Length: 199
Image (cartoon, rainbow, N blue to C red; front, top):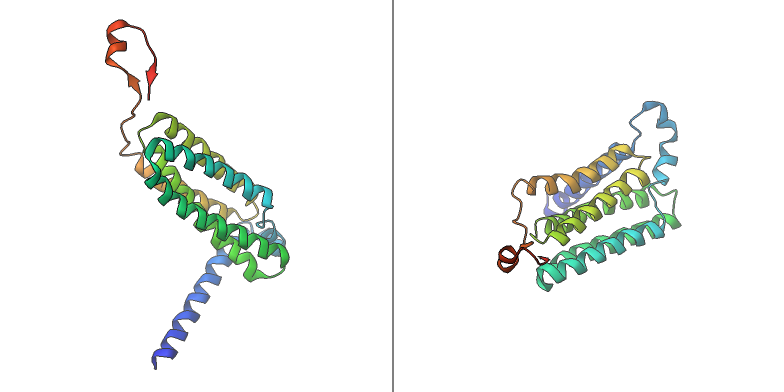
């Protein structure tokens, strides 16, 4: 087999794998609903307003990350988030224009999985930062977005579950080695018995 034939065979195998994964993720868990699988897949194409809400939440989190952890870390995480949001938005726009095209719906699903990984990265960076304000904000944002997955993608429970796992497993695993919180009472506060909590 020549190099070009081998490459073509590899690409074809990957394409079959992508399609198999897409069909499994978006096939209703209840076999009684398999006859409306196509309609349920269309519900995965969420509104642009939903995308904007998620983007706004992540932007606020990235701004907080820049303030409490520095621009370098925020820029690195922000780059991944920006790519995820761009891909997700474009896939949804494409699927909106061609709602009957299964390839367009598959693009939405694949973009959604990468988006989940980006959220997980931002959540881990925030909740392990050691800054109490950032840890709380990160947990709230991540929890809200995961809840959104479960609602908007309820037509494909396996897909929604996988998104939740991608976000929460790294976050939960990282919490086994939590960062030390940087908030505490200053020494002058402890001596005098008055003062404010500093972060």
